[in-house]
Image 1 (cartoon, rainbow, N blue to C red):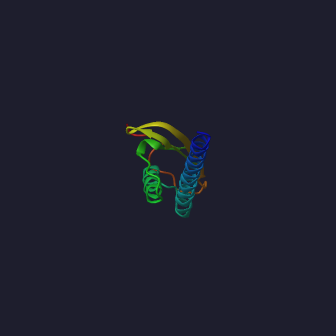
Image 2 (image 1 turned 60 degrees about the horizontal axis):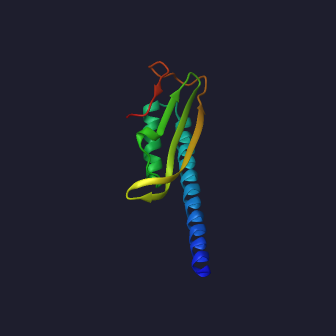
Image 3 (image 1 turned 90 degrees about the vertical axis):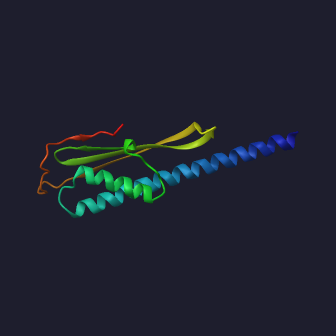
Length: 130
């Protein structure tokens, strides 16, 4: 009996370590993708927030983290563009329903140079589509 209990404890600890590594990998992948997109956006003038959002979704999905439009929020200000990505990594799934998940988020701000051409539209908030 004692052997079974210790076996279950070892399996649970192993699964917890695996879930933690998957969560860390997911966070690093999304953070790296956001930094890559920001690096590309800095090379030109002021980036369009719609294109920036699409680039973020494409890059993170190619990196192995499937995000939806609801997960990505882009806020445009006069001198900066702020991106916040919120998603979760499922840990325990029972009958197709997520019972336990690790919530993660990445928030970055892209400072736009004063000399960069402004967009034709006034500052706006791109809220997630529902």
